[in-house]
Every structure is written in structure tokens, then in C-alpha cells.
Image (cartoon, rainbow, N blue to C red; front, side, top):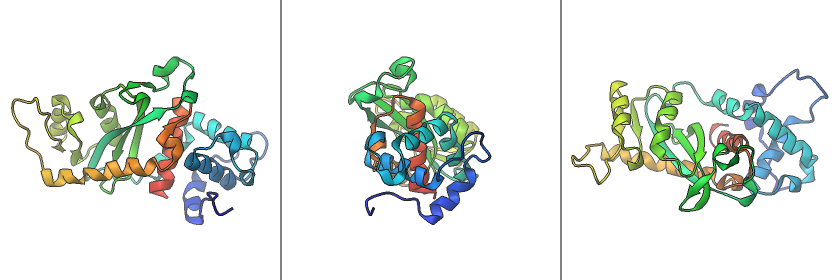
Length: 251
């Protein structure tokens, strides 16, 4: 029992109000036990069918995760718990590669439709994130591993809203992004690429704070089913990332 994961009272008090109520069909079994089982699978990286019996039947654990993933419930809970205006002062943006296990292949629509693509590390998925001043992920998106970081900057900033400054690495050095930030009154703390003819000035002291988003990805990858992707469906993997983020940073 000591090695099993169980939601503590504080975490459960934050999550429980956002769960579906008055749903048709048979009465659901203990939500706290089932969600603890889902998190155990995400943390240990085991197969769903190997989920310990203390959490209930493995089919119940997986079906609950999959059904609520289809409804985007896990992402909605994360959105609800992220404090309003949390990105207003400062935000960091970055991405991280995740190796796609062979069992992640075969999803409907092919690899591209399921956010899997070739990169130097083989077939991978990229997790794109925007974090707040404390390094807590607030916005999450997925793409195939061969998608350039800067192409997701626009959608991520649309979701984040206005910020006072944006910290990012050279992968986000693009004139279009800099112009957007300038038009919104935000400071771009982004170093220029080495091939720029005119050097880019940026706040090197504040740029050192970019370690927080790197640390956030490391913390997320302590969940073994985040460090390696086993889910065929991109929506299920995104839900797993959202649920891990919720537990690691927001409850």
C-alpha cells in the first residue's frame, strides 16, 4: 500500500468540485479511488491492465480516463484551477520532446494526425507549454516532433492573453513574434540567432529565469507515462499531461 499513489485531502478538495454530476447511467464508483488509480499508472508507467487491484478493475480505471479525455474534462479542470491573470506579469514559452513508444503508433488518421513525427530522437511528440512567473505550466499544446517551436508561439499566446514580458530561447527568435509582442506592449526577452546581421538586445538577467520552464518539464517527466508516450491518441496523451500538471503544480 505504501507504494501506491493516493490523492490527499487537499488535492481532492480542489479537484472534486469540477467533476461531472448527475450523469445518466449507472452510479459511478468512488471517483477519488479511480482518479488515484489513473495517476498511479501515469506515475509508474505501467500498463493499464497492470493497475493494482486496490484501485478497482483496470477496465474501470482506463475507461474513466478515456471517456473523460474524450470530453476534454482533464484539460478543463486544469483551466479552471489555473488562477486568472496568472500570466499577466511574466510568462515563459518552450517545448520538450517526448519519445513515442511503438505502442503509441496506429492511431486513427496516422502519425501526423496524432501528433507524432520524426526528429533527431526518432518518432516523437512535442509538448508546448507556457508557464507563469513561478514556472507552473498554464497552457499546454501538442504537435508532432518535427514541428518548429516558433510556429506554435501564436496559438499559445492567443490562449495566454496579454503578458508584460515573454521569456523564450533562440528557437522563438522571429520578427513576427517580436512585432506582435511590441504591439501588445510586452517585452520580448528572447536572444537573437547567431545568423542575425544586427545583434538583438535583451534583458540577460531576467533571461536567466528561463530555467523554471526547463525545471517544469523535468518535473512533469517524473511521471513515466509523460516521459515516454504510450497513448495512441493525441487527446489521451494531452489529457495525461494536463492531469500530471494539475497534480504536480496546481493542487
